[in-house]
Every structure is written in C-alpha cells, then in structure tokens.
Image 1 (cartoon, rainbow, N blue to C red):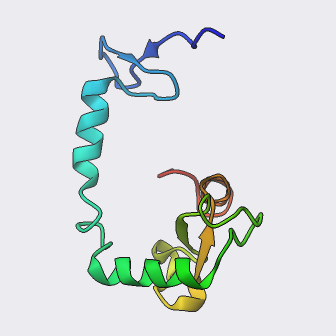
Image 2: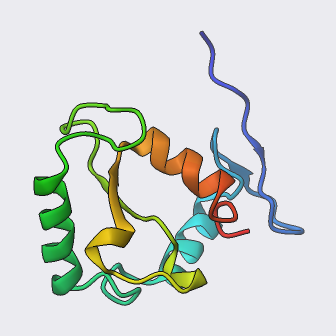
Image 3: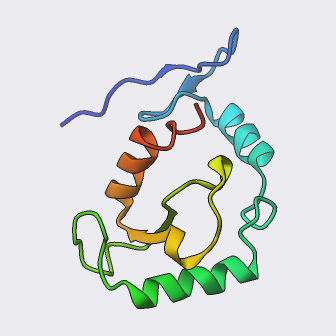
Length: 113
C-alpha cells in the first residue's frame, strides 16, 4: 500500500513539507521538540522514574483494556497535574500506548490543545 503524500508544513509561509502523520516539516518539528524541553526539565526526574517503576511493578497489565504488561508501558496521571493532580500513587495508572493516547485526546484536553 502506498504511503500518503507529504502535506505542506503547518507553519505559515514555510515551503517545507511534513512527513505522513505529522503537521510540521523536519526543521519546525526539531524546533518544537527543542522548545518542549527534556523530560527532566518538564519534571520527570529521578524521583518520577522510581515512582513510574513502582507503578509498573504493582500493575501487571493496562488498567483500561487489560493489555499485557510488556505492551502497557505508560504511566498516566488519572487527574492531570495541569488540573491539580498529584504524583500520589492513587492518581497513577498503567496504560498501554493506545489507551493512553485515547485518554489524553478525550479526557485531558487533547495533545496540547
């Protein structure tokens, strides 16, 4: 099956083209990633890594769909920290990437929108 054609970059007046499943050309995508900052700069430090490992050990499968542990490697804040959620264990759940993306898009306000 052929891949979808490249679309124009979503940045106004940019002559570049975005790869499939992206809205930005490679140059603007790199700029966006650099502006976002590293995980540690966003608050995911060594303490978070220990907490994440604890959640992954305690919950063997995806809490939403039951996908096996090797496929469910995301730790999600049930109530996002942007809405007052905390890193308490009872506010964290193990999810597979698909369920995590679905929850983010439907409950947490989308992907940065």
